[in-house]
Amino acid sequence: MKKITVAKGDGIGPEIMDATLKIMMAAGAQLEIEEIKIGEKVYLAGNSSGIDQQAWQSIRNNKILLKAPITTPQGGGYKSLNVSIRKTLGLYANVRPCKSMFPYVSTKHPEMDLVIIRENEEDLYGGIEHQQTDEVVQCLKLISRPGCEQIIRYAFEYAKQYGRKKVTCFTKDNIMKQTDGLFHRVFNEIAQEYADIENQHLIVDIGAAKLANSPELFDVVVMPNLYGDILSDVAAEIAGSVGLAGSANIGATCAMFEAIHGSAPDIAGKNIANPSGLIQGAILMLNHIGQNEVAEKIQNAWLATIEEGIHTFDIYKAGFSTQKTGTAEFANAVIERLGKKPKLLPSVSYAKGITLKIPPYQRKLPAQKILVGIDAFVDFPDIEPNDLAIRLQKLNSAALELIMITNRGTKVWPNGFDETFCTDHWRCRFYAKASQSVQKSDILQLLQAAAEQGIDFIKMENLYTFNGIRGFSLGQGE
Ligand code: NAD
Image (spheres, rainbow, N blue to C red):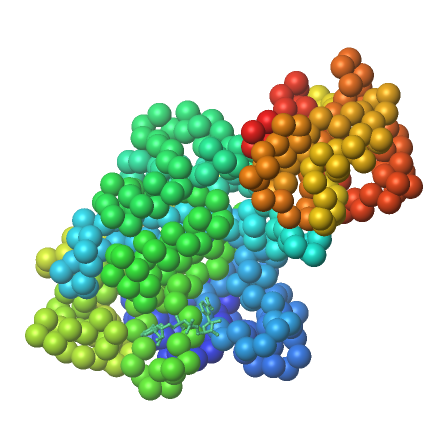
């Protein structure tokens, strides 16, 4: 018997959760349910994160959360509950299988059967944003080696355990050589440990185009958070409907399972919502906790129900579907077919006891980190790059000298082009003079001089080499 935490959520949440729980119990799932209240009512009671301490404690005790969609109230100040749960509990892997059920669910891609594995905690989702000048705002994109190793290892281990043949990685490392570059490098390193699994890397733009046009070319696809967020919805939609997909959010100790759609307030309380997305989330959960036989039984009964044309309104097609059914009746139809296999769609077989074990991150020996300069970001409206350079060169010292100014990443000094549009936000690179090493005190001295000369510096970024390798990008045109 496994104790799990269940949140029935808002809108259609209670209806689709009741349907899902009824199917699981009828299939013989060994579950003890502990229910928590999260979402709209908790937000409106004044808790800006939509979840209280008692609910957190239940999830941390049971380690498994099956969650129906929740409604985020309109208006500012409410934090995303999903993001809070993922980040607070370290749920680093978002797993979303997207499989076509052609011809029973319309899709242009009858052969599609892929799994998107999205990094769930890092990238631009740290939400570290600042306005720096009148005209410029920034969002910090953070990618860590442990974050990359965990998610990429998870993708290969998933492929190995579920008998998948290929893992594809999408990044934009032709542009973001440090952040996406690290993700790609770690992908290449870990791929070496899985000689039996084909590996492939594509730049995300062409990768996304191929995914949308020929999804049958892909098997497991692993990517950083933002690309994964967007492309996992694209993949679910072209497989048939976002309404049919479930997802798993996996961490080292806890995991959360859900449908990918929202709380659909427009159809709440009418017993017409399709519970399939949450049923798929529950199947992922049962596999995760080792109740694979029950998962297999439900999946095959669900496939049999779908292929017999028993459809909720969202996928119902007159002349093709045989019965338009409500939420509770759809659950009963699945229950009636427990123990049966689909006749036309391929049935599934989940190997007994698949649980993915990802070894904890092993910190490497620290590299030799040498300070070689500084990027000083300054706010200057209405100034020509050459005039700015003249002002900044006054800050040159025995250790540091101005070598480059860029505007939005493009070099404008020395030898800039008049055509380059400049906003009020300048990155000014001061680099170590030949054979000099830079000390923190040299930087403090430079900043002191900048302050005295009225230079409006808004941010500093130290430039380092790591074991002699440059740890920063060059300016475009440098
Ligand atoms: P939504 O997914 O709730 O609805 C989009 C459309 O799809 C609606 O027309 C809806 O009726 C339909 N739909 C969704 N699920 C369905 C189902 N199971 N069966 C049949 N039709 C279904 O997206 P939205 O309207 O953008 O968001 C509504 C609320 O849900 C918002 O408060 C949003 O913040 C929240 N939301 C929550 C989650 C989550 O908890 N994981 C995810 C997305 C959105």
